[in-house]
Length: 204
Image (cartoon, rainbow, N blue to C red; front, top):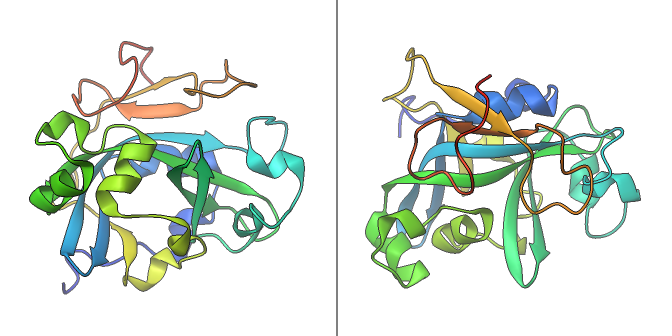
């Protein structure tokens, strides 16, 4: 692996989730398992805030299911909804309870493995949406609490193809939330065909 796909440091995550959600775009999501490396370019995220955000799981207080959100930054927070998994990254100092949801990646590595897991050859459907993304990468509650900065099973790295390149980032209301749904906390690469949901929203 060398330094080319080295994991991002904890300092990257120890910030406002809005800043992290934006800066994750264009980075490389990597998952290493028995089938080898799989992953791709992050093209869509959503920020969930520690304060005044009723859609954030932390707003309910700390419990067994969301405890990872209140831990140190730079850890994976995986939860289950409708029997499907969603992958988040914990942000800000321990005790805050904020995170960024990964909504979509552009598949780049281990595509055949991801297609097999998803049961489809349609590349657009492999990892477009948070549940599809987790199924493609075989991510589940076993990954909850995983330290992303160690570069072992799951981590984020700079994408060699986007380093230094200007990215066209757009934002919109979050998708699928039942409260605080008008807040512009969803971020995505404008014009990228692997983004889920509506794409023609105001640019940043």
